[in-house]
Every structure is written in C-alpha cells, then in structure tokens.
Image 1: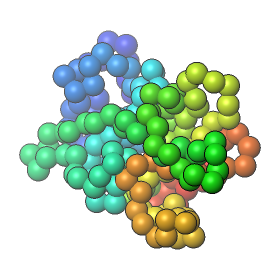
Image 2: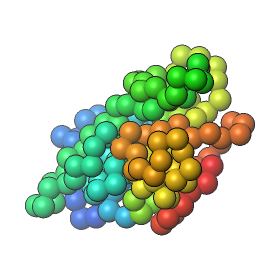
Image 3: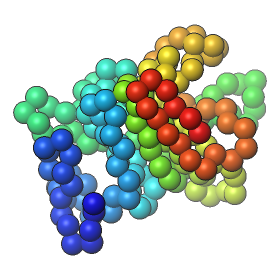
Image 4: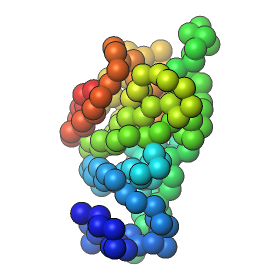
Length: 170
C-alpha cells in the first residue's frame, strides 16, 4: 500500500503524512483493536491509538490519539530484555539495540519481532499489553499488564509472529 511516490498512509480515516512519519519508508502496518504499529525499513517501530492496557509498548497507558482524530505517533524506545545473568531478572534496554523486523497486534496486546543490531544472535519476541493474552499470569511479576515490551521465552529462533483478539503465537 506504500509506494515510492506516496506521501500519506490512510488508517481509519486519518492520514499520516510526512509531517508525522518524516521520510521513513513504512514496510509493515499491524492494526489491533483500536491501536496500530508501524515498522520502518530502518528497523524502528512506531505506535499510536488506544493504549488502556499498555499495548502500544510506550511505557505507560496513555491514549495516543486525540478525540479530534489527530494522531500522536510515538517511537517505541525501550524493551525489557533477558539479562545474560539470569539471576538478575529482565533489564530495560534501548530499542536502538534491536532491529525490529515485524509487529503483530491483538485486541489489547502487541508483539514485536527483533534481532540484535550489533551481534549475531537469535531473534527475540517482545510482548506488551494485556497480561492474560500474553500468558503472563504465571510469571514472577504476577498478573499485570506490560507497558514496556517484554522478551518472551521462545525455544529456538523465532521467524514469524501472529496475534489475534486474545492470543498470539511465535
């Protein structure tokens, strides 16, 4: 849907133009239950829309679309990574450390698929939003929504992600 000479992307009646996205080329758009995530060719992810469960992955639950339909597109800046020293638990790292390959959105949760930018390593799946859709009721943090994308434990190298209303798969 994005062509080299196009200057706008249409989403739910709102045009996102160059004043919003700059000169970035959008490779993928994932739309969930009132929220949207864009993945750019340079491996960054941007989000806007409903965010009552932290599904945008921006670190809070603030809505990112004004009532008048104007967008408040924000870059996803932080990820909760697995710590190499397992006993210390997850750590917050910059999203700049990962090249985001894809996004998938459910009703009130989202997934990001990324690979480290500077080291050869397996891809990681990051999840944010509604805890019950992410299977987090059994996590050490207990049942709580995740507003910062959290690395999921995946066996092997994840190659694709998918999300639907109340679930997901890798």
